[in-house]
Amino acid sequence: MDLAYTSTLLSLLLLGITNDVVAGLHITKVTVPTPVEVGNGGWLDCEFVDEGESIYALKWYLGLDEIYRWTPAENPPIKTFPVKGDPLTVDTTLSNKGKVKINDLTLGASGVFRCEVSAEAPDFHTESDVATITVVDLPDEEPRISGARSSYQLHDDVMINCSSQRSQPPASLTFYINQELADPGWLIHYPTKEDPETGLETATLGLRFPLRPRLLRLGSVSIMCTASIFNLYLKSTEVLVLADVPFHASIMEGRAAAGPGYPGRVSSVLTIMTSGVLLRLSH
Ligand SMILES: *[C@@H]1O[C@H](CO)[C@@H](O)[C@H](O)[C@H]1NC(C)=O
Image 1 (tube, rainbow, N blue to C red):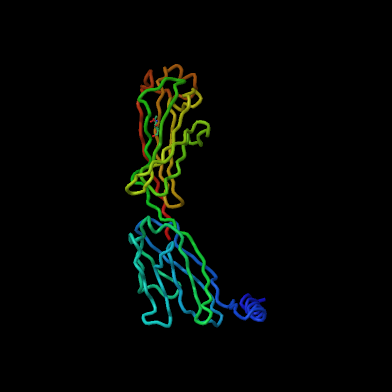
Image 2: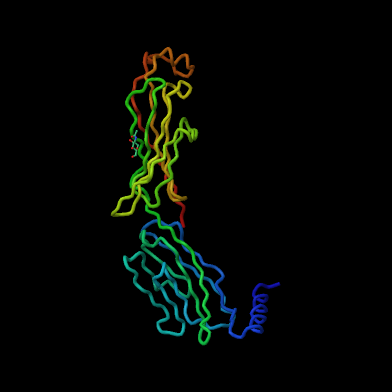
């Protein structure tokens, strides 16, 4: 059976029971752009069916602050209201009814957006529904691996940190050793550090493991750290930790690339490579 028909039947039924209930007007869907990058925008969309009721007003709120009002009986029908801190701007030329174009979002626009639709007098029957926007400020830099020594002996503890600077929310960090997810027991979780002025957060993850011969590939261990935020950001940084291993020990490992001119000792050089991949899903 048709949904609209069913709900009309339902309203008639309800009207029959209590005179003051008007169940015609209701919100069917509320959508918002999320997650969204700082400086970008999108559409707030509040879909409703009036089922014969006249709309008095449709309002959009960010938290407790009204940002937009559409009152079809008034001229002009659209009003916008400034909010402290200017977390966003509303494009009144593109906005209509429940569909509102918002631009220039700042971190202050993260929060609950509420659409409220009310019917004409005498009932002023009101319906509301909410959706949450998360505004994302991407990290300033690629993830940074620090703390590595210039030289390690076999069975030394390798202790390093990976950090992703100043983002909101903080980036999720992951360590890979030789392209495999690092043993969770080797991870050290540090609390994120918040910049009190900007509210941006720096995430740090520690890694500590013994430099066992089985980890060596051609005399070195690859350590990669990835930083990600939702599906908006993914970057990685890789370092090679070279062990100070005598040549014959590497041969016994069976993994050394012995060839002409291959040095007797693997030099203790830390090579840093950065391979950044930035994934941006278009809105
Ligand atoms: C890793 O970061 C933590 C927290 O900032 C710090 O206390 C620790 O000394 C760092 N370790 C290394 C190896 O850099």
